[in-house]
Amino acid sequence: MVKKLLVLTASAAFCLAGSVVDIAGGLLGQNSTKATQLFGDGSAYLNANGKPDIAKISNVLKSNSLLRLSYKQNVKVNIKFISRQNNPLLIMKIAKDALNGLGYNDILTSEFSNAGGATWGVTVDTKFIPDPGSLYSAFKESGTEITDINRSGELSYEYVIDASNSSINQTPVQFSQEVQLSKPLEPYLIDISGAKSATISASAEDRWFAVVRILDKSLNLLEEKRSDKAINSLKVSFPQNAKYLMIDDAVSLENIKRGLKIYLE
Image 1 (cartoon, one colour):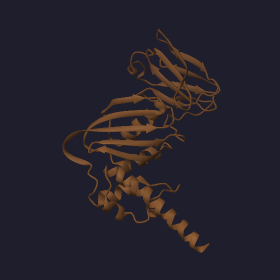
Image 2 (cartoon, helix red, strand yellow):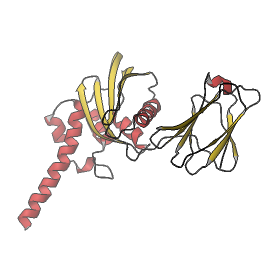
Image 3 (tube, one colour):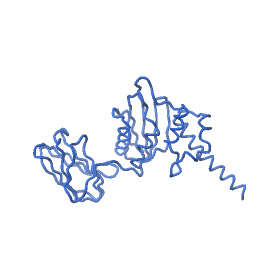
Image 4 (cartoon, one colour):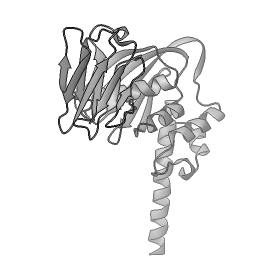
C-alpha cells in the first residue's frame, strides 16, 4: 500500500512537471534540457487552480535569457488565438482588448474561422513581441485562461484559450437613473444584465444616426435597430437573454461627440 502511494505521488509530481515543462517548451518552440532543469517538479509554477502559471514560467525563461522578445528593427509577429468555444466575436474582443492594454494597437487580422470553435489570427508590426506572461495576465482580467502555447516559428505563436468563464470590460451604467456617457472613441458597449429596456438620448446639437445592437453573453447578435435619419431619442426593449448593448452611429462617432445619455430600467 505504501509502495503504491509512493508510485502515485511520484506519478502526480511527474505530471505537474510535465505540464509546466510543456508550456516552457511551447514558449521556446523546442524541448530544452535547461528548461526542464529550471522548473523542478513544477509545483512552484502553478496558479491557484493548479494549472501552469504562464506569467511565472515566462519570467523564469526571460531571467535565464532563454526567451527573446525584442529586436533592433520592427518585425511582423504572427499570433493565433484558438478557442474550443464557438464564440468568435467574444474571442476577438477579449484578445483585442488584451493586446490594446499592453500597448499593441496596430493589429491586422490574418485569419478568422468559426468552424468547430473560434480562431483569430493577427499580425503585429513591432520591435517587441508581446510578453506571453503579460498576455496571460491580461486575459485573466476577463476571466479567460490561456491553457497552452505553441511557438511554431521564431515570430509565430499559437495561444489556446478557455473562454467558458469570460466576460468583457464594458461601460458601467446604473439602473433607474439617467447617465451621461462620455464622448465615444469606439461604439459604447454596456452591460444590460437584468434590464428590461433602455432609453437613449442624444444632444440637440448632435445628429445621431442610431445603430443599436442587442447582444447575448457571447456577443452574438439578438436584435438590431437602425435609424435612416438623425434622431434625438430611441427606446429599445430587451429579450430575456440579452447581456450587452452596443450603441453606434451609422455614419461617424463624431455625430455624437457630445456623448449620449442612457436610462436603464
